[in-house]
Length: 312
Image (cartoon, rainbow, N blue to C red; front, side):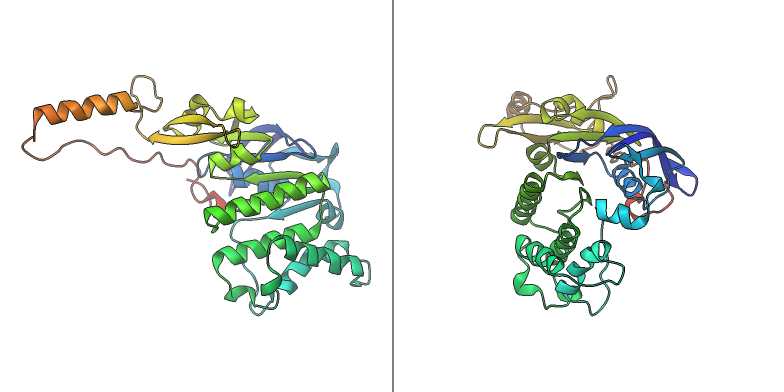
């Protein structure tokens, strides 16, 4: 999937500005960046949920604007943030909806549809919950149901907007293991928005870092997950370390402060911290209240983008 010169936004307010990026076929790509930077808008535009004001989205070299919706749904799957299940729908019924694009003109349910749904339920650990109503499940369980629906759709390209939402760290790893194993087995193109940078670095073949509606870095973890790039994208100080066990990069946030001189994030090193502690101990307690100005968190350029609201 390739995006060329893409511009998109809400209510006439631009969010994406001339985005050019390729999600390599048969690989895992993670979109990373601060809230409101345009990740969800990019994914929604690629999924034809949002009409761009300029540019094109290509799959297999073809502009998808000319595709019939059935062909598109058979090729590209999309899981948005916070989908809502209808009242009274069971887990199996909802997962079965992933098969709708593949059913024939008369909507016949076939053995291969049963097999696809059963596999999706098994992979996501939902077999014991298949007869429960989706609305009766916990947030994490519901998220697994939606992922199962996307898996049952069996598309060549799968776009997932924060697939690990509501999941504890163990379930996050479990779901990402499932998705990446399935991606390798089927050779699909998998594109995910992930907020946990260390997991993104561990699971993605390609990382795309965004800021203010633009792609600022793209490549492998060794190119994108660096102190400099993380500091620039998130406007905070961080140290990116190498984990010898997983052979992946681990991001350690240090500070959200900014240097007036450089505009980059400031960080106190362990040596600085030790020296400061020693000095304070030698000086003894101080009198009077502490003073200083609190630093506001950097505001997102496009607020509530994920909810489709008009950005500020």
